[in-house]
Image (cartoon, rainbow, N blue to C red; front, side, top):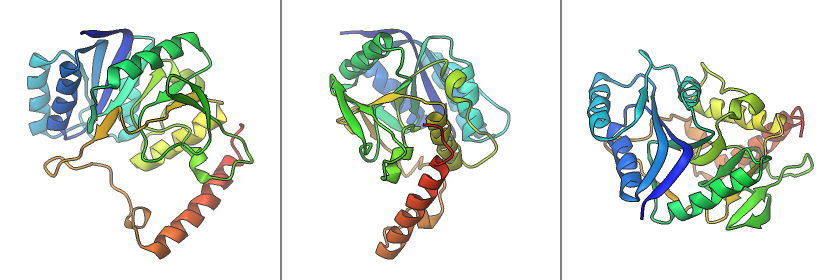
Length: 256
């Protein structure tokens, strides 16, 4: 059965992982998912990947938005979203793959977004559940945030992981910060989303609609300091304490 999603643009950010991009596009094709438009925003990939992108364009229909040099995640997200012409955007990074049950639950999310004008984003994937959830319907829960909530994970009210959002997202929450590292870009959008009273849903079975696959041939291009990912118990405790203080301090200045 063909799954058509009029009014939705699939927006994919890409950098030097053209094989991963192909896998993602063909996965949607295999699931018979047809979006009104597909935009691939490339962040100045190498000549080898640029050539492969052009080859893919002849086989898989998408609009390619490029830049002559690498300008970072913020610029890639901004220029990609600027190219979207439909009311809704499904944002997916190129290293994700939709599962067989994606289309059913995505249709539910799209119906909800059309019914409820107050929801700005519906999240489909995360490494861990959002800490404060209120049951909504159809397997989704509303993300809740209050100044007195203590879990620092509340800051991930927004996430760059796969999600559906309104294409006029920037009008309410602002644009992505450019010229800084990718993790800082995401962090600042998290703060901005809260400051500007963003509101959204979270899919309860959050690891069932997409899988993330970084191959040895095309590993993640996001670099982080070693202490942020270390599993050493002492470093983990220090990192937890730091984030608890830093994130909550930053949120003191956010207008909930």
